Picture 1: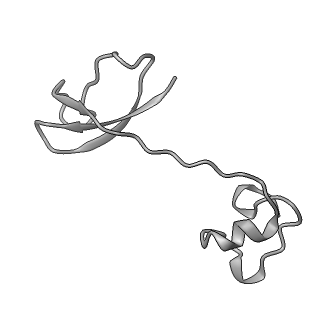
Picture 2: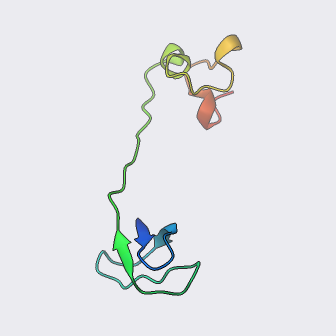
Length: 78
């Protein structure tokens, strides 16, 4: 099931909801309102292109001592 982002027009909270279909009804988990507005979802993809690319993204937790050995340390490569 896909995850969709919503903004509640009643209470102003944002939520990510797991729904079976794009047109499934959504209910705000904070206030119970059905006045949910679908938001644009953004996603990111990580590719395996060598140990240097992970550290170069500045999101590698071991960037100073980067030794992935072919996998990205951000995804269990260590």
